[in-house]
Image 1: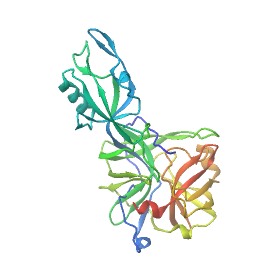
Image 2: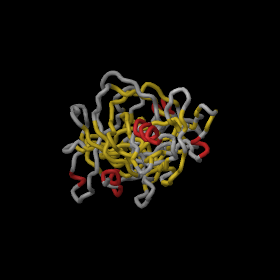
Image 3: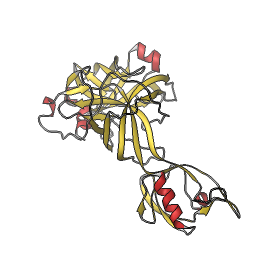
Image 4: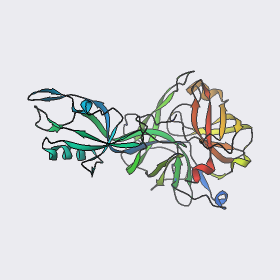
Length: 336
């Protein structure tokens, strides 16, 4: 569950639940703050940080077939961030820059695996359209679903996912004009030994309910806007020092829009872990195992509650055993 699994979004109805919170400093009085419990799935529409290459293609020109992107060493997953030093945010920005090249060689700033490099490439004039192209299929936004962990009562700030958000090229995503939508779960691909399962969801409505403001190693953060909290449950948080081996529950949405409580067992608590793996958990709820096989992609961020207090969130699944997974301590998330 290290990456968001991306889906085609659809529009429709409304959801019962809550969502999200941005950077809240960990202060001595953090435990006195009240938080709305999450567990609902949300659809995220995030900026790719440029024009991300999905695949390479050919360009049919007057003098034959050219492969400028392949010749320049570009690969799927690369993200074009600038052309001749001019920042690229959208597909339109890239097309405009190539049109302005008039067929002369340009320098692309390309991000690959978190590292940036400059690549020189010669645009080719396509015979059919008359436009200059470099032979790439691209996208400038990424959509995915994940689970909201908490919403701060006083500010509406939310935290979700509990792990790093990256694309298929392992590039850190960029927050710019990024939106959060209500989401309904319409199906589940069950997890099996050796293969992670996934939730399948539809974005609901064409109006965003929150804005995403930050992505980092501990998840995605932002602020809710004009949201109805009447059905939300207020909880206190507890530090890792209060977590114990034994029974707990997670709140997840695996059908429709409303989160449900499912029984788990905390098998290990590791306060000192620096990889956001503060808990090892095992799903013991037979209903959840029957429906999903255990933990699946899209459940990242599901809040972990023990003794009535929010102590963390689900982050990853064990590939060799989908009933087991890792969790992050809630203080780490609120610290961002």
